[in-house]
Length: 111
Image (cartoon, rainbow, N blue to C red; front, top):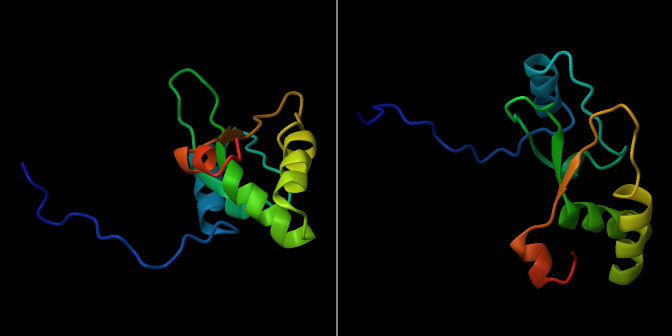
């Protein structure tokens, strides 16, 4: 049966600094969903695996863009910084973010 009132797409961007993270905190009150400071805009979702712990899902390419915008580094230097200092960071006992390499990242030689 077709939904008579399908959801409409919004043209307003999601407020990652507030509403989405608040949603995650309400939906997963026991989870310790962490992400690197300053990379809120790289959050693209949250996992909800059966039997697993939820984790934030983050975009590699957006993180690289954030690094380049903040530091002015070349793409290669930003990649080195990202893979060593950001993606390479692991927080023991916490629900580390899951980093996603997309087809676009592959096409741009980011992953």
